[in-house]
Image (spheres, rainbow, N blue to C red):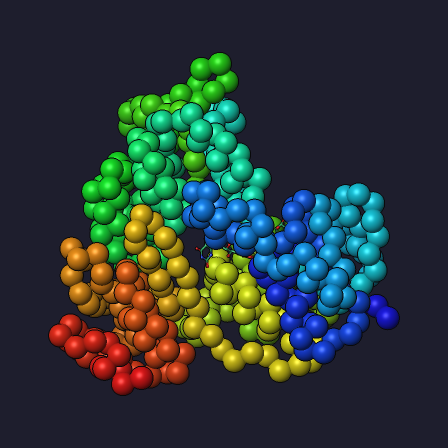
Length: 406
Ligand SMILES: Cc1cc2nc3c(=O)[nH]c(=O)nc-3n(C[C@H](O)[C@H](O)[C@H](O)COP(=O)(O)OP(=O)(O)OC[C@H]3O[C@@H](n4cnc5c(N)ncnc54)[C@H](O)[C@@H]3O)c2cc1C
């Protein structure tokens, strides 16, 4: 019986294989992951694992026996390099026949394209090997420059500042986490990072990395300023891995295009997770998006498995995401798209508040800071289609839960 080949053993790939089995599929399933470790969770790499609070065993997505117990053939440390006529080949020469194919290949880190970007002491953070190198590199480093004020860069900055290191974040845009949160939340995070000892440079471009004896010593900004650095973390985003999909003949303009059923344009080929370009999950007609989150990877993988087997897809989910920086838990539900109004509930000075995004009077998303109850209420309201007009949300004197009546 020819079975399913799942390429990529991250959050999406593992969930896809599991969902095939949970859906009653008994055909062979081969799950191939390019990294040497058994599948693991990525979010702790910039949080508990970096801090030493989560060890390698606790990173694992499933217990070691899990895959064999479910008759999932897990291959690690091998990359699929070629595919043709129902056979895949890995870089170690293994041949894997398949009838159905799932691409869960994730993304690769974006690198700075400036002189000096290959100096020792310049780090990225996407996989466990990166995290291990970063942890080792931090050992003796005191002056840290983080290039990129997105989630990962800011989580690392917070960790380094908590250890008493001197930390500067350089962000090219005029606000932090600009693609994901409301302006008021960006401002709050800039102020809060600065209060906790992180220097934030907005509108800063990197012209070069200066070095001495092949080691990074400084970040040179576009305006000529030099920031001394013992270690530089580059956190400027990721690009989807589209090579295999393109080899199959798929056109991939910024991700592997899939429909709401996780189908690619090729019969019997699905894709899930960070590598996909999918119809906007919440705003019809908004244009396709790439969503980089564990929730999306897991949900889309379940959808893809149902598509492959003809099973019932899981119910629609509202996208959600989280980020831990210092002692602040940021939780985001929904996906804001061209919001024209933001209602801030609570006082940012208390470090507990929520920003609700609206477009044309319709609630789109919430950024909740240390406010898990508001996050849950909005997530539930968005999932169930319960209206929460802006004028109601503005009534800060009453809990959101009461206003929504859920
Ligand atoms: C440091 C960090 C912190 C994060 N924090 C959060 C967070 O707090 N909350 C949140 O929701 N999300 C977070 N994310 C994002 C989240 O981890 C991703 O959205 C999620 O991992 C996506 O899963 P995926 O399976 O699509 O891709 P990945 O996890 O990237 O897995 C893809 C896998 O495919 C493998 N692969 C690629 N090509 C091949 C090939 N040809 N052959 C074999 N294997 C291949 C890769 O090696 C990789 O292991 C974080 C990400 C990082 C890097």
